[in-house]
Amino acid sequence: MVDSNARLSALIDSKSSILVLTGAGISVDSGIPPYRDHTGTWLGSEPIQHQEFIDHESRRKRYWARSAVGWPAVAKAKPNDSHRVLASMERAGIISLLVTQNVDRLHQKAGHQKVIDLHGRLDQARCLSCENQVERSALQQEILSMNPFLADLEASLAPDGDATVENDLIDMVSVPHCQRCGGVLMPSVVFFGGAVPTSRVTAVTAALEQCDALLVIGTSLMVYSGFRFCRQAHAMGIPIIAINQGETRADAMLSARIIKDCKETLVAFAADIKIDF
Image 1 (cartoon, rainbow, N blue to C red):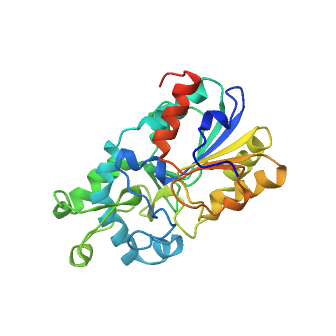
Image 2: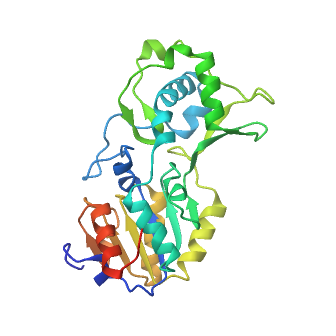
C-alpha cells in the first residue's frame, strides 16, 4: 500500500477513467453529520431499519417527526469543494461514473451528471401501495400542517436529515399518508436492512468493468452495498485507492490509502492537474 502522505495526482493519471464511490465523509463540510466516527463506530443511536418502518406505525411516527425537524438542513445544504472538484473531474473526462452512498443529492447540485444514488434520494418519497411519487418539499409542508408543534423545534442534527426529538412529542405526531390511495409513504431511500435495487448494482458493475481504477472517498465501507464493489474490483485486478481519515473495511484490498481530509486531498489534486472548480 502506498504511503498515506502520497498525493492523489501521484496515484492516478489525468487520462485515466475512474469510477468513484463516495460516502458520508464527503458531505460533512456541507453540514451533514456522518453515521460513524473515524474508527467505524456508530455516532449516536443506530438508524431506523427498513422492515420496522413498514411494520410499525410507531416507528413511522418517530421517523417523520425527526425528519420534519432535520429535513430543512439537508434541503438548504450546499455542495462543498469536494463535490465541485469531482464534478470538474467528470467534465475533464477523468471520472466515468460516480456512485454515492449518500442521499443528499449534493453531487448533482454541484453539477455532476453521471451519478448513481446507490441508496436513493431523500428529496422524494413514494407510496408503498400505488408507487405515487411525492416531492419531499411538498411533503414537509403537509407534515408541518398536520403537526405545527414541530415547525419551530430546535434539535441537534443527525445523518440523512434525521434530528433528535423527544419521545413525548413523537407520540403526538400524525403520520402523512398517500393522498392518492391512503397508503404508507416512505422516503425514496434504502434504509438499513433494505436491498439496493438490482438495476443499480448491475449498472455499477458494468461501469466497473470499463474503468482503470476505483476511487473510494469518505466512507469506511462498513455497509456491504458499497463494499461489494471493492470486492469486485479486487477480483478483477482493478486498483483501488481510498481517501478516508479512518480505517476502511477494504484496507487489505487497497492499492493506496490516503489518510487525509477529503476536501484537502481533492483540492490539492485539482491544483496539481490544473482543473478549475
